[in-house]
Image (cartoon, rainbow, N blue to C red; front, side, top):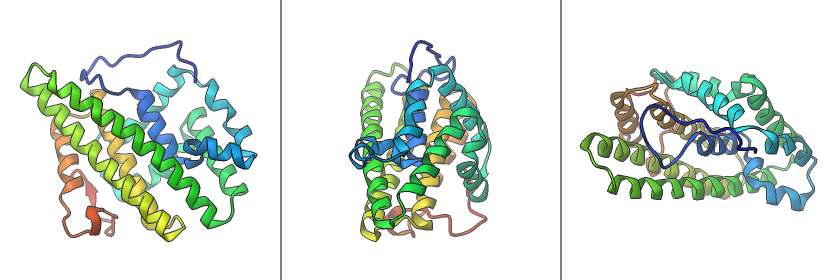
Length: 241
């Protein structure tokens, strides 16, 4: 990916991550083979040819893509709406179309469910490592906060990010154990995607700290779900309530 254009946020001054970090997480959740490129290379997948344009994306293209996606989480969002967002990423311009085409190519060439599961677990491990690095950076940033407002905001972001990491860790272990990617695994990936977009929407000034706080409490409030995983069992479940 080229980086000749730098777009900075004029809103909440969180320095530990940017739109490129969020894009990496989104793309690897939506098209796990992107996060398993080394594994794909060893398998000589035709998908590699479809992935080549990723390296030519400009920072501006990526920022515009992420910016548009964050518009979908500016208000309370139901699971059905989040699911549509997950499915319709491909309709979001050239970048979204590329991500979905990569995933469709992966699905075409890797048909055995156990093999697909290996790609998912590899990609999720990459995402977990990346998000843990951001979480650590946030920890260092919060220590340097000079006012209570920024301190509170970064702590909330850190808590949401930790929840997303736990979602991905559980989902990775779940897929590895089941050797398949079922509806429950996809539900957890959708939850992680929405959590990441909410964080980025806040950084871009599209949601206020109250909705960010509601997101945090929603993600950690259900103690009845095994391994603290919310799987959207009810169509009435609404993120932010």
